[in-house]
Length: 311
Image (tube, rainbow, N blue to C red; front, side, top):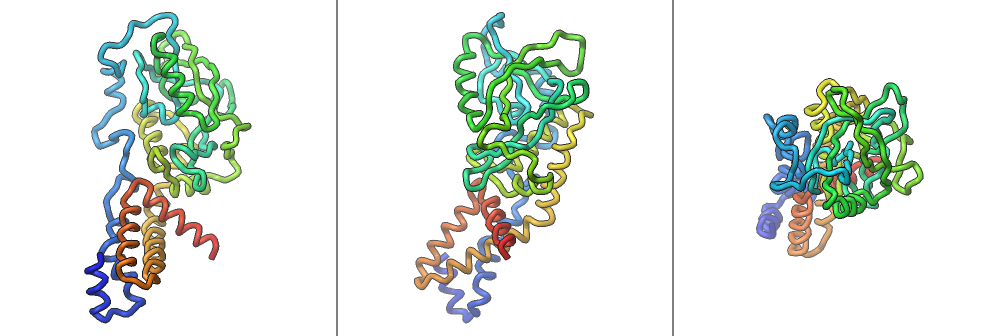
């Protein structure tokens, strides 16, 4: 980087050309790097040909030697990231749904798909029509000998506003089986991170588009959930989820390249105000490193959107 800056200065390039030259040489690939829907999945490999449904037919448990089932086992129902990210042992799993609820991206995420100063959005359940509304997901059977550790783990994983409750779970496709009593984590409207429907879908989508946290980009959560629903429950309708996916994809195609370029040129121009060339090189290398880390794109997008809103 220092050699490049030195060569630029010696070439006689005008000061107004330097940010663009540096951007083209080192930073343009931040935009151009091919990514599925604008992100690389860290949670699940939803590559062409991958089938969650196929694994459901062949892998009931994620343990090599699962404990035997007993009446003391419990079932956990997942309707968000638990559908595809099961970081706990289970001895059986079923596709299905719960009646009388709607899934909505009305919960802020400050510990997984966002951070406190830039929260993301994740799902919770809202009461709906008991005869019409269904929320699809996956129920996992937890062995009695493992349920204490698993519930402790999930209590911590869902600590940002979620509480346990109990509901009846119905298997899909419906085959007349008796409902299963399941434990489910729901973020109530009373918790501090409840965001609600104050913003319409385009605004929620923009928050998802520009957020990332320790568990990865917020858009990845959205796209993984949509892919799982499409594969596990073909034909099931979730208008809220589908509208968000369409809106975020539109932002990625239409807005993301310009926003990232604007943000990078702004950052580069600020660094070039440093007097020492060596310090400029050091700061530019740090900027490049930050851009290449998970969440780097979202950090740039958020900054560009903030600047746009202020102008």
